[in-house]
Amino acid sequence: MKVLVVGSGGREHAVIRKLAENPEIDRIFCAPGNGGISVQAQLVEIKATDVEGMVAFAKKEGIDFVVVTPDDPLVLGMADAMEEAGIPAFGPSKKAAQIEGSKVFAKNLMKKYGIPTAKYEVFDDPSQVIAYIERENQFPAVIKADGLALGKGVVIARNLAEAKEAVHSIMEDKIFGKSGNQVVVEEFLTGKEVSVLAFTDSHTISPMISSMDHKRVYDNDEGPNTGGMGTIAPSPYYTPEVAKRCMEEIFLPTMEAMKKEGRPFKGCLYFGLILTERGPKVIEYNCRFGDPETQVVLPLLKTDLFTIMRAVRDERLGEVDIQWSTGAAACVVLASGGYPKKYETGLPIEGLDENGGHPGVIVYHAGTKKQDGRFLTAGGRVLGVTGLGETLPQALEKAYGAVREITFKNAHYRTDIGKK
Ligand code: AMP
Ligand code: GLY
Image (tube, rainbow, N blue to C red; front, side):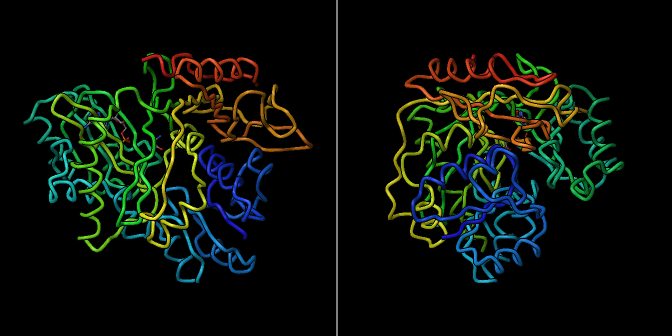
């Protein structure tokens, strides 16, 4: 079989390495992929958002199954376009992907179906947002652009001045384009954050092992938000009791709600949760695997990923017995100095073998390029180094041991992943 994976980050590398374990798959293609991914997959130079180009390639190449991994192509309807062309695809339809594509849609869904989340108001007029925030006078105030914003559409404003600036740049300067036509203002919640990815075919929902992301660029959660600087799995805060509550109050109700709305969700549904004193609440939904959550979750999956993905697509997930390892995983991201702002690329990476790996760990490539047999940096997040162990401290020790031996000019990583 020939499988095409759409996307180019560490998450896609993790998906591909897991798919490659299935002997039925002869060839894996990845569009556009990266240097490290080229070891397991044939790279195809098509942008992840080029729906027409991707479908044309899949038809021409006789692809048997497509995995649409990133949010943008899903929100653009790439999974539907593949299915319409007769190519089975893993990933939600355009209608279902709105659960991530529009925060207003997601919040209204939760309100309608009683799914616990922060209280909120929706606005399309900047002066009304400011008036509301002034009237409420509750800080920090959480302001979210409605649409996709490269993970940067959430502002936690500590005071009125910051709130005004955020509203101005999102709604008037339109730094995220149309995504800022509407904003959600919501209550600030406190508690431990947990990510739970779940396979669902819209009839069955099967949560994966929980994980915890570290979004800020510097230690002690300082500095600007990034795509994610490291992850651990499982989250020690996600106890069996919390898991049971999440299943009853959040996971099943969300799956049912999407079905009732005529938007059955098939694929990987990501629950960004916060464990408040009053129980778990949803901070955000994503319509896809998280990055770098996938880099700690999939290595702990014992069941064949391709079998699961096909069962999701065929709506027979209930027939698959999904098994997880009892161990732990930790991923430390090596980023380019300066990320998430300006950074240099094209720098040679030292400490990788000819396959882009390193002994004792799994090295997932996020932003690399292969040139004359060497790996060069090509993005903000460069590598995700995952260590596995019986316990979290063991997993962390392995990951950090390797991270200290892999380097490039101005490389930056957090030294406190998993410390909390
Ligand atoms: P998101 O892009 O929706 O994942 O939001 C980015 C981050 O903002 C989250 O991981 C949380 O740390 C924080 N955040 C979002 N919404 C809230 C909220 N209502 N209360 C507290 N923190 C929040
Ligand atoms: N790590 C957060 C995300 O993938 O959105």
